[in-house]
Length: 184
Image (cartoon, rainbow, N blue to C red; front, side, top):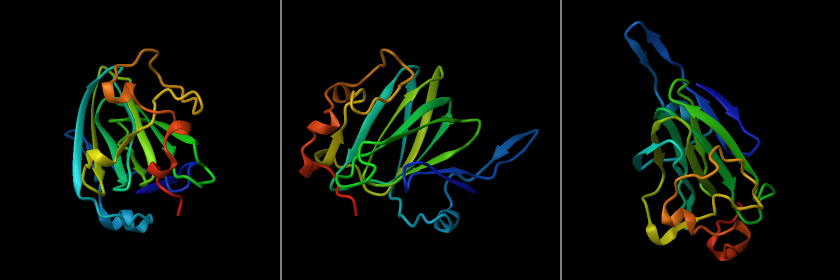
């Protein structure tokens, strides 16, 4: 597994080895031993899968205090994936990283707890899978406004399809400090 650090310390782009022939291909998006070799020692407790059509934008989400580290990858289609450091006191607070994930290249993005995460579907449809390190806790969920002008994320959809929750997200600067995770 090739591990590529991003400009946000702790956020990693993982490229598993893909074995392919005329029948198709095989790869391991999750292997605890290889992740440990890459410095990822999290215990994942839940798998999630979402299906979305072109233009659907989900995010920017996180949980606190029951933070979730995530391993994310695309099973079908293509997405524009975004991670934002929202840890109060972090030198990178408010900085974001984006990558286009394709089902064809099998890359996996590791998102540590303390980062908001979102994605926008850029193919006709996408099937998106992610492992998380804590169970879903609706009372602890936070939504940072997807188009927060202070963040300036260049989403690939001018008028994305959003849930009511995502439309009602808060600008990062308006998020109560006590609700945000602390930089360790």
